[in-house]
Length: 89
Image (cartoon, rainbow, N blue to C red; front, side, top):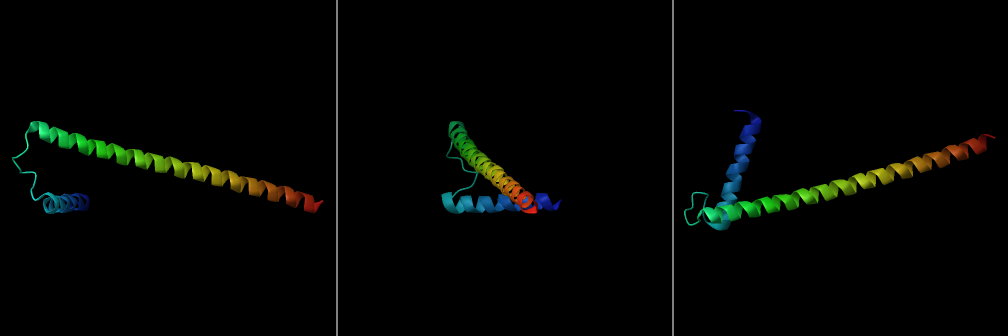
């Protein structure tokens, strides 16, 4: 088995243990019907979309910040070059 697969299996095992401690049951539970499982799945997907939106927002803000920082750096360099040109006259 690859190291990556072993890491993923460990994550699943840890997640199952946390779920058992939190809910007192495993995925082997029989108290939920098909519709209940679909609802749980839907809620998990909704959570996933929230995480995705958060990541996209943060990534966009970081990109905007980097662009602004680059423009400021360019402006400073341009001002410095203009000042250097005047000084050499």
